[in-house]
Length: 256
Image (cartoon, rainbow, N blue to C red; front, side):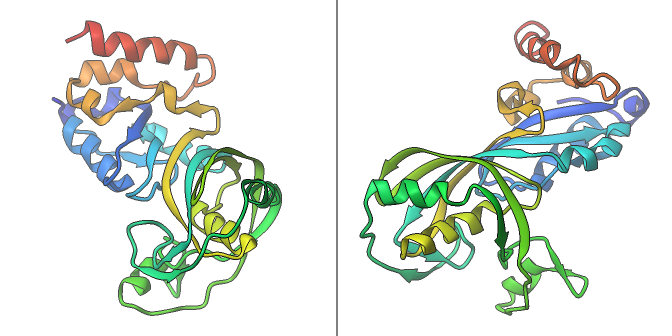
């Protein structure tokens, strides 16, 4: 990775990154900002450290498009673990409740599908929603419970991909502001047993798909010119989607 702030003015566009597990969304932003010397870098929607998958970055003037992109639908593939509930809603937290898993695959499928449409969710305590000016996770880290109001969310599509009890894999297309960790817990409640999120992959944000993303390792191989070819221009995003996929492959294989 090589870059300089002197090239800032000519860089601007969207960068699709396949975020690795263990990285925060901010880690990816800092990685690109420092690695290529770009001052303005932002993202269109946070992914938890446990989660992997598509993170849409805006570089330069493209940061102005991130709000609109973030408001679009998102697609996830989630691993649900029945029989345990944790403090964080995923496997990174402490187990706070355990219980028997006495359900059939048919009951699981019916419960998952019942969440199609508009639903109400109480945001997880480990989230960036603010209470009295501070994100909820700041209270959670100090062991404090604070009031959280239920919010409306929309599940446009949801389907079971695999059932191997106590594990369930499902795909969901959801609106902005939908918490998959909360959805997994709510599915468990519907089935009468505790549940948590075992894995989470974001596969789509609006019209942007994980298949077109570059990995962090691929970014490490790029210089500024190679990065430039990988970006999706902000003025012609839709027309450049197919070309972007071709550019990504050519950038990694031909321009080293």
